[in-house]
Length: 219
Image (tube, rainbow, N blue to C red):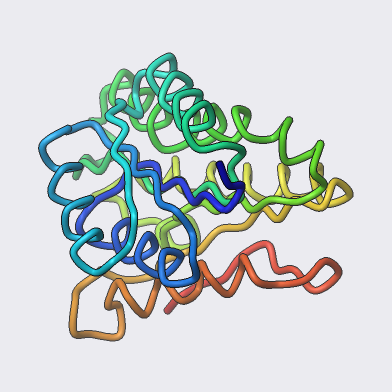
């Protein structure tokens, strides 16, 4: 059992997997959480082929009980968590004027409430150890909303607010809470390559107390 565990909730082939690789190269064991078990099997296989140990824990970010259960399983099998990365998002192109309220609620459930649920599973142990890192994947729409993606913009703004509030609350406990606000379309081979973005997650994790940023805006 080791406390050098990095959990990526909302693991996917872009930023999620790139962040896992970045922390894996630093000696972290990797626990990936996502809804589709078959996709998780592909991601863990890809990581293990590069010599990075990784474990799959299926859970739906819209189902808070399944998130809590997955994190409990990770802690039971691998020990206390050092890093939590919440990368899950519900993305739908919907203009605000015709947006069903139920769709807005669904977006907040995944993009904001799920992040808080996951954080609350790891905060007590991080407080006890006086260290830990909680990182959220933000979006540029939180800063500059686009009407075609109203629910995503509103929920990313809420997630950014949550980050600042939670970070201020937990700073005295030695816990780093921060967000990488990705202000562009993630695409390999460009400035918004997932591997380049993943460096910012590592940078936030490595910042010492007293010099920690609450947000990096990646433009």
